[in-house]
Length: 315
Image (cartoon, rainbow, N blue to C red):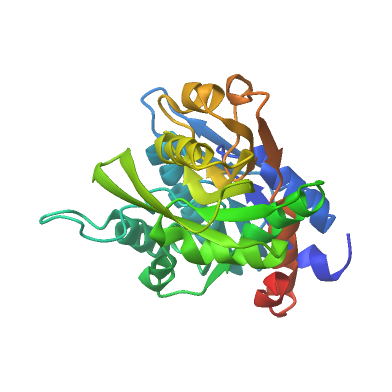
């Protein structure tokens, strides 16, 4: 461990300890010694087994399922570090739960993504490092610095290493066009957009496809695949319009409810995701390939600690 890195400490809560260890391996430092336990009544208890006084501390925790438990673990960990006189407390949230509740879609809706931001700030965090926020405006929900990391370069590197021809990158909706364009630019491929409407949550209906997919190898990109209804419907529509084959990719594989069955029975040749959310063995279909975000997060931590540009990682 270099002397410069000796002031960095990385701790993990319970959501994604393997990712935290990979980040530490990238930085060349040991994972912080801590335990996150529950009392018999379900209350969370944090135990820090080493000093953090004056240190730049990074806490790795995806607020994935069970979302509320993992969120509470994060808040209690931040409070413990603050009371232990940590120099700075930097919260690394590879997957930001509640991010899809970022606005009032209907009257009397909560804006829960903002509430979560308030909780993290109030607990005592000095900085947030997040990857592929569902809505970029969530950065503005915080009054502390937010470093927003992108998953597109990781996915692009994967596809650049495969022998694929006649590519087209497809955005499954209008909201994902910027993300799809970034991937298309890196792969030097054209862009297509699916125009759909969503009559109710987790239900979508394809309307039309803007762009040429016939005779192409299509790559559908999204930030989150939850129940997989959107991605599977998009795949069906693309194949019906003459695409040779369809790959799907995302940063956050939530894969809840009927997602696995839908993906297995769909025309998707392969689904590429990252480890922002750990996939249990029963969710590891033969079709699913998982890439690690640890090198990107580790490099971001290094750059933040040494006061270097983070945005240059994604140029």
